[in-house]
Image: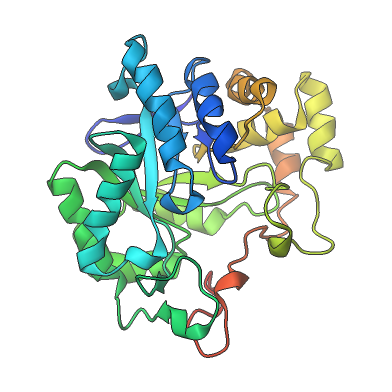
Length: 315
């Protein structure tokens, strides 16, 4: 399996287990299955509402001693209601408590969007704070402090466009080490990948299989299916792989990390086996032609009359 390298020499396995949408009653088992079947990269977030259950898996697995904490890369994310400078490190410490860890390998600003501290998810424009009220650099400076305090080893962002990255980087000497974004053959993000590569920013692909199990309210009526795409299925048949394995391998082969979510034991094992395949030049060319610039997670849920978060992705 490929690994992503960081400037200090640390390495992260390219294929990890995502935990977004994993039910509380299932995620502990899923993380244990993953860790016991070779995964060394687990992706979490406070807003997923299941970090305490993920923490139970860590406690049990690390407690047995066969798999060491330092051999597993754990990522989490700062939610939008903790962007104010006095809220960042307390939110991080709550995540550490829930995950039953002393440190994170990577901590990300989940979105370039800020809510009021008592808002879990906004229902009206008044629930937001503008980026004039809470500039991204204010939040970022606290992320830097968390790294300096040893609470996290690496810091980065998620769902940041080139414009948002440039805005942040203009105000700091601490360039984000990661940008986690939606990435798959229907949304290949070539310009963003080129920008991140130029500036030494690693990239993680989320929703690599099309996120078909996300809430119905987030779905378009006629959205295309990645797993049913004829080109992906043809390539899968050619290699004796599943469509999901081809989609995961495509991300890994492009040099990004990729975090497919599953709570199904067979699929968890199948997903990490994607590393064993190799797509040839013709496969990559055919998949390159599938870029429709289609987003499954389009950020429209942040757009409300009266707030300043229209067209969050600038595209």
